Image (cartoon, rainbow, N blue to C red; front, side, top):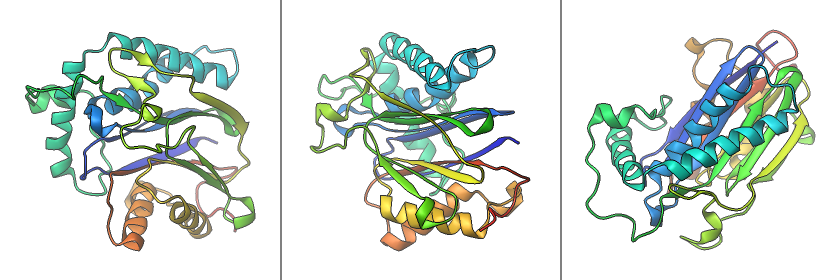
Length: 281
């Protein structure tokens, strides 16, 4: 058995969301991040989402501790990278994201990678974000054998999991909702300063045939829960030719809302107890 995962983003309002995934055998990592608009946080969210999965890819081979311990080690490395990163480079990445997502579509199933800014040759803006460090939230999950799971909550957003029935569906908000626009409460990872506060790390083990979704705050949590249950009941596509389930979820949520007022991003993981296909509901 192995994990399967998908990502999709409708990143055309503020261009400040990001998503990343990595899978190898029984291990994997998924992440979504939402940059803080008042800090020009698009570059910070790129660093957070891709940095987490990249560092977990380096940490997991040979790791002998708990999966929660591995997630904390990934965060330590991300903290170091954020402290050493340049706010000006983050601004350049934010401008590159605007160029990229204007042409990727919504939902976009090929999130921009850290290598795109150089290829797109974006120009850094002359003025920064009012002297504020580019900052972002982060929701992430480290995936292990046997359905092992470590959730990382560093900011607002939503986590939902289900096996296909309302009785087996749970919903968890991020560590701290963004009560006030631009509030320091929303800033958990700052370029040039590292991690702010203490991200919450939760460890659990998912039952077989479980779908797990991480989403930024542009995704309505109730709609996500309902659509995730329906996807579980219908069955997860067995191959790429049948479509991207994360993109399908995002499209249906967008249709229900009549459009989106904020960037919206979903990372979806599926842990099966048997061969891919219907979840047995």
